[in-house]
Image (cartoon, rainbow, N blue to C red; front, side, top):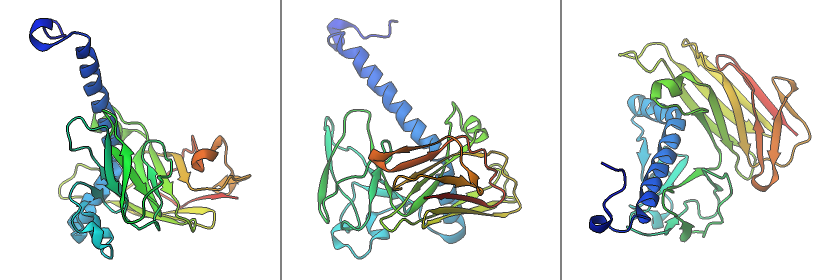
Length: 267
């Protein structure tokens, strides 16, 4: 059978390649994001097991002092740091969503890292073309990610890590990550990572018995004023770049082990 549907039965041929291409692109985008975020999800489920914290949360869970969030059931948070605003209406190309924090929180686009111009306490209209799911990162956060999503979870987990840091207006950020072999039951040795940024310095603390084999290759820090000097482990960082439009500092090819302490500084 040909890939395209019959013209007379199912409609004009020119529409079909676009339809299937859109589905394929949407799947690639969604799966790439999912695999990139696996270390974040793994940490959330570890926290759910050990402390009872829900991995997926209603907006009011993180912002209990904002009554306008109590009835919101078409958006949700993944952990405390990722806001999802899906399109739930067929054919819609825009979506209205509320951004918690009443203007005190900086929300950045997951894909572009651009700051969202939000409406304090009310809805903000977002573009939602086909194949796009609006995802935003909360400020004062640090997310451990997989740098190179593969065809399978195993292949992805064998690759290097990346770290995405989103500074708040005061220049601070905080995050944690839980890492183990991902296979053993009951769980065996593990390692806990703590990421903390303040005053132009990012510190990574590492504790535990599990030895992480994969290196941290890329560190991205959002909300940085253009630096003139960047150091990693006390030495001048090589290959760093800066995007002024998104205030984005990127350190590539860092090749840092996550079994010890790490310090990144910029000024």
